[in-house]
Image (cartoon, rainbow, N blue to C red; front, top):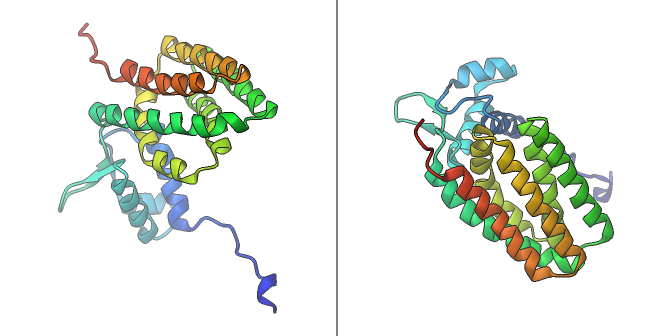
Length: 221
């Protein structure tokens, strides 16, 4: 058989599949902060050996989503407001960079996707569906990331975004979300008007203002 006829099969390995599943459960808080994680129990749940589970847990630990103590159990990392606050600063700068690269090449279809994603975000917020809200927000900002065409920005974001999303889910608030919808509308208008530097500023402010809302001290009742 000729080598050029052989194409790689695109399939997640067991380790990657377990990693993606556990990561989703941690981000959406299906696995609670500080909840104990047993590789034996997880392996039985997935119907696989413990090796890919251990590899997935190690990768999640490297990303700060799982923690462990020497000679002790592994557990879901606690919510860390300080870490999230630092993450918001990094994420804001990276998304602003993506917007700067993307704006000159955005097409009408991209603008329509921004509008559709923002409408979906508003609907999810009004329905109190935090998971759908975060997915819609992700789709909104993905338009800039895709148009920017710089995979290094995406790779850099992958480590910080989960920490932010966990905090968003734990502190979901309709008013905070609707404020983001309004900011998105201003971004879309600036894109349509060709005000690219304004878009960059609005994108950065969007993430920084969300960070301030989610990481500010909670007033005692």
